[in-house]
Each structure stands twice: as structure tokens, then as C-alpha cells.
Length: 233
Image 1 (cartoon, one colour):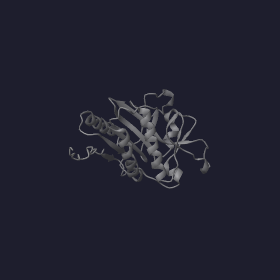
Image 2: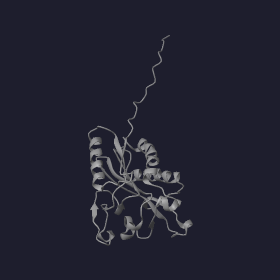
Image 3: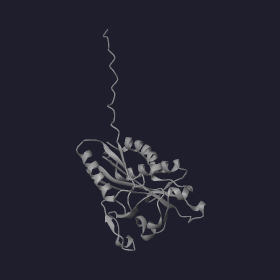
Image 4: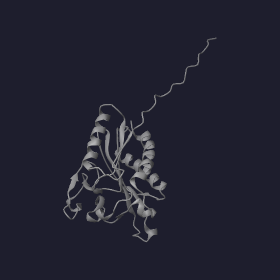
């Protein structure tokens, strides 16, 4: 009778966590160009196999950007400068009070960009819920929406988070913008995301109390840990 020796169970090598880098969340918003530079450097590290990626959490100085599908008639009506970018989506605004997150990662081969958008929407809905705000998806439109009808506002859904991504060689750049405590006045100067039949709102407005990007950042960071486990190589 042959004796058998129990083999030690195989264990997978530990997965290197994806680090977070923050800037501008302490009342000193950073230029949009800095965000682009940080993304470029992070994407290059992924491309060279130096790390798995970086989550950038930023608060920008006021800026309008235009995605690849933007139309001239959707630009700000007062002639304000707009920066063309290679993300999906249309014209939007970034600025103080808004939390911008750039998850610079290599997407697993089985995932398409549209599937990543759905995963990010789910994470943002969970983040909003942590602050007492119920977000939801609207079919045919990306991002996260809320119902302001209970506040006596327009009964149509209002957008609270935007998503615009770009992929090159499977590496994701750009990301999401979550309206926390920012002014809504800039959104009145253009057609946000090319959508003329719905409004824009913030976590603070819906909750009825100020919610700052600095407060939201650690909650969003925690939510994105599970996102990366699912979609990042």
C-alpha cells in the first residue's frame, strides 16, 4: 500500500493594494493640468509594470472640460475657456466642493468600459447612501442621479455624479466627479453632459447639511477597494 504525503495547500500571492494619492482637499484646489500630469505618470507606471495603479482623489480649481462627444452649442455661453480632453462624455465643470476621482488602473481583459461604468455607479450609490442620500441609475444615461421631488424641486431626476473614462492599452484614465458642496451656478452656463432636460445637484443640497470632499474622500476610497478587486489586473 503506497503511502501518500499531504501536499501543502497552494496559496495565491498577495495582491498589491492600489495606493491613493490626494491633493487639493484641504481648501487649496489644484489646477486641472496637475491632475492630468498625475494621471499620465500613474498610467506610465502601470504600463511599465511598476505598480497596479493609483487612485487619485482631487479637488480642482474651476475649469470646464469637453469630452470627445461634445458639441459647440453645449459649451459655456459666456465664452469661458474649455479644455478638450480624450475622455468619453461631453462638457462638464470641475471646481471647489466637488470630489474628483481618477482610478488609473489596467482593466481586466473580461471587462469592457461600459461594465466598469456600471461598477463605478454602484460604488458611488453606496457612497451617497453613507451620507443619507439615495442615488440611482437612469437607463440610457451614465452617472448617478437623485430624486429631489421631496424637497419641492423639479420632480425629474437630478445628476449628482458624473463618469467619463478613457482607455488606452487597457489602462483607464479620467474617472468620476461627485458633487459634494460645490456651487451649482457654473452648471447654469452650459448644458451639463449634453443633457438639457434634467438638473444637477449636490450631496449637501439633498442632505440639507454641508458635506465636503474631504469628508467624502475616505468613504469613496474604501468603496473603491472592492471596485479594484473586481476590475483591476
